[in-house]
Length: 191
Image (cartoon, rainbow, N blue to C red; front, side, top):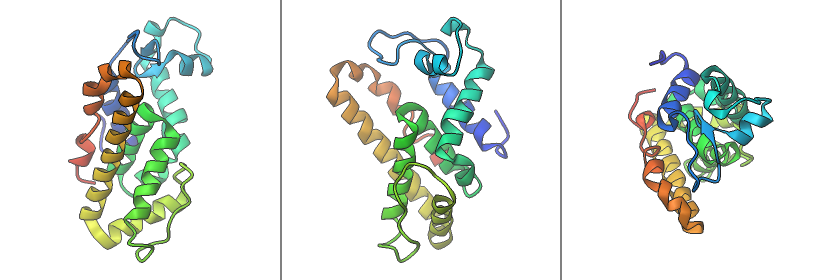
């Protein structure tokens, strides 16, 4: 297990543990995946080989660049690594824009109508303003605020899984696996 001082490595190890190795489930619209990286994402990244042979190091590089960096999670990890890890896993499974918007939406509703910190523009990209809001939440509410944020992030993630399964019956095959992503170790790990 990576050192807690490397939030990206910790998040990636957790997500890889859920995603596993190669999969090609006909019910999964993502098609062939290795290490949780879909064939479409791997091809867009320039990978031309068999998906079963996608190197783990390449998958990690894709995770870093297309998920962690695109959301802006270094900003968030500098304040609280558990929040960054939770948002990363949601981004891998539900999309980076959705994960970033979930974070910003929840921070907005936890600010007590702007009394604790100003509302954020909900654009899905976590930058300095999002990090400042997280810092203010923790300063005002402490661990309880951080834990509430994580609980609401999980709630939004779970609600979206239900919506995805309701919209396409074939996705019901994945609902028990998706549940493994809710209430993860990040919600039970100190900052």
